[in-house]
Length: 350
Ligand SMILES: *Cc1c(COP(=O)(O)O)cnc(C)c1O
Image 1: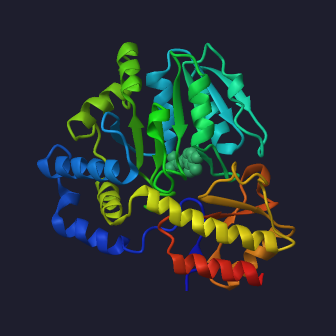
Image 2: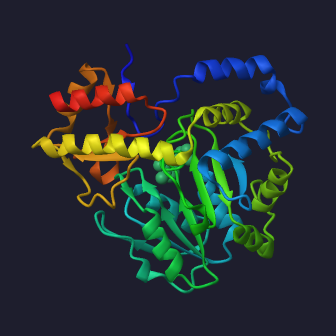
């Protein structure tokens, strides 16, 4: 039997996926043109259910993109005149900064230690964008609402905030009002196959894009926005994944309930870790710890992984500088409670 994957991306997809794929096939949407009414209805309904479940403000626009990585690129290409500032404590935030740098942005890097809070006092007044990663998937740290609110409060009026919300979007409540450019891939917390992302933008971000007027790229933001407003996309999109997103969110509870459930599971996992002498959280401070990606230090990670695997559980490898010393566990909504219970049993017995 294939083990249950707790890998934080690509991660376990919803168990109902085969049925939804069949429905997508049966209703003909997979062969529908992306300028057709059928696609426009799907786009409209998907955005509506996302607003509803994830509590996205009505004046924010939702765009379908191909991945979080594309979200990094579009921000620099289309919404940055010169300067973006990047606060990061792990591999994904760092990659984002280098993508911006390679595209020619004048970037300001603010690396900070894991276990330390976001250094909001280091805001550079020249930066147009302050870039943060809500859940640093590589090490299981989180920038929660309180930290984001502090950043929003300390910035200057002209400054905008961009949040890479991959690994958090769909799992925990995000206060969209606190930032202007939110994006995430569907392959993590949204429980879908890879190859689709969401970009959620504030009225200020849209106005800023208009003022820059960048239209030189295939994926220029203004081109994407124009089509999104008509429930279309500029290139032929991943219709199957959009259909799956619609189906999954239709079936999902409101984000506050989803978050509550994930927090309860994390509390259970947490007490297990505290009770096992050889296992430790990578991040001690629980307020800085992600609710959706657990990163756990173990003296012998490969032994731990082998034990879990023998018991039907695939835990995620550590990432980057923590590759050898930690393993990671996705606490995403697509993972069922019974699967999570099994994981806890295995950790208890390890
Ligand atoms: C996985 C991940 C990405 C990249 O996602 P893609 O689907 O490969 O574009 C970006 N940022 C974070 C925080 C991630 O976890």
